[in-house]
Image (tube, rainbow over all chains, first blue to last red; front, side, top):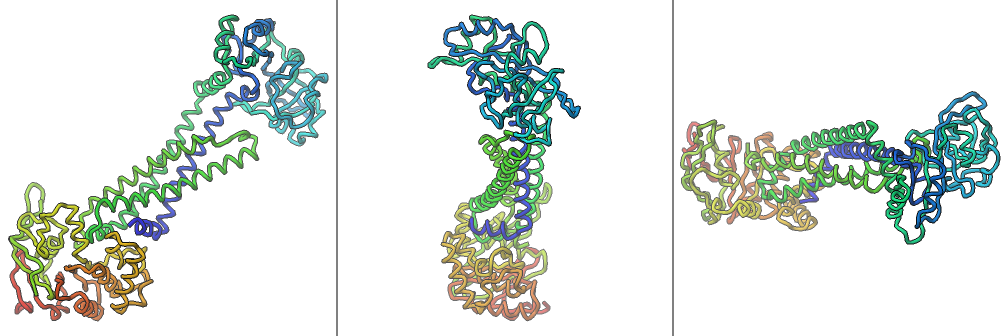
Length: 381
Length: 233
């Protein structure tokens, strides 16, 4: 009977494609919006992801995220280095500045000063130039997205040597790096710590964080607790600090509500289209179902028939929707700076499958009720 | 000829608001095998209700029905469904063919519903349709066929699983006189057998002459039982 159910479904091509469209569209909307939402949230932790070698981030107790910081005195670096279990500790500055290009373009940027000697804090992937070039006078490395934003005519090679004003001081592009964009997608400028002190005027204390690597066999969580106990500073593992960056966006922006509404709309639209079309399909076939019941098809078989029809629509529609959503993110992340680094985590298709399954169960159940309530004697009236 | 169906004291009432309306008033009848039995009467006389009860798809308010010695309303719901599938063939006024299936596939539905492999069911339906002179129609879809041809497919569907009782609801109502006659001729030729009962609900007087027995109903009672219609009808 399953075979008959499938033939009944595919035989009415208008409704069949309508159902597929409904499920696929809903899946696409939910999966795509959830993916963008998750990836945007992850950008709250972009600075942490850009320094994968650091196990622990140490900061002033009032600092909240990589972008909401309270500077510390440089002597704190040595206090952290003195804590047992620390393999190495390096300072980093993350501060805001203003760039003015030769063409007069003005842009707010983030200046990131990394340890002069080790360059710890610099993203791993170099797009152009050599890491040694950062040792040159006024040298800065720019993130690839930022370079395209500030100098749209230039590519990763031709931008090298470009001069501009950084907080009214001379700066020269000596390289580009592949960095995860921040939540605000601002331009990231990497320079040596000593250079950053010149570029970023401010108070006596300007060190934003101390990046710490644990000694082999030491638990980062335990070391963070030890650093807090010994220094009075705030110390978090990379994972905890990344999580705080994400939480900061969730708590301080309307993004979760906006995306939540879109996902809810996707679900409602899906239920409406699928429910309506499936109900129409069932209603159009109610006489046939009645005839089958009169002939001697049991309610159990009818249930399995409707379940097969709903399952087939759900499976194909979901597959198409998820494929389109993944394709959208893949193409976007490879061709658009706005979607740079975006990916589809496995949790998104899984969660979407749950939502689609609920949608199919709901609409299938409502339609099935109509079939089960059909009196086989109706076929004689 | 033997008794196929025994109907005893059948009463049927339908609730209307807080009251109920009695549409069958204690009907007694016996239907024999090897006969083409017509159930005739005006609209509202209760013939559709009676045939629904005989076919096991509508429970009576009172009385009993024995179909080939089985008290069908003494069976559980699930066993009654199984009984119908094995023993009763249905022919509906509007054919009720599945539009997405070919003629042979439609005819094979009772076999497939009974759990027979699809290929086997369709092969048997094709064979039967060949015997019914429809070999050239087996791969057509209902939308490609005339009303008469669709009703012939419905006859094949009603007979494919060799049921002992065939119930037909106005099988010629939607057909012109010529097609209706052909359908009835076919029904008489293939459905009628010494061990099978055929009941036809109709008010199509063009085919009254083909009946072996006519039961006429009025106001929920059988008022005539004979080879022909009573004088004046």
